[in-house]
Length: 166
Image (cartoon, helix red, strand yellow):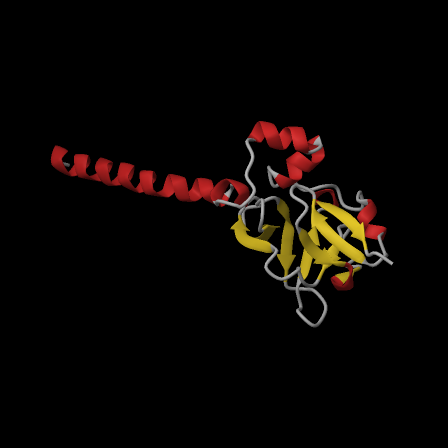
């Protein structure tokens, strides 16, 4: 094969790799690393503000163990807020028992969350994150109850519950 052709193939290979690398890297990154959000802190500041488990879930897109959150059994009226920035993200009126081991909701508070696609398990899943700080909350699946048919499967450690005032 002529040297000229090899150089062209090598150049095309490097060009494709250069284009694909940032795209693939973003696919596995938490939403907080991909977008600008109203509330932004340095990694050091987030570590100071959050518990180690909250940091792992909210800032590194981790998942808490199923059935480990006391919020699974929370039945009072109130609002669930992002543990990272205190934005109201879910109402107790939309919470239901999905029997999955994580607090589940069929609808978010309007304009409170954002969505992205993650490939952490090798296939696409719809990630839900706080629309204010970008903190990873969980994932949304299409097996929820009416009226939406959605199941927002949310890490309890990413939430703070605020009871309704009597």
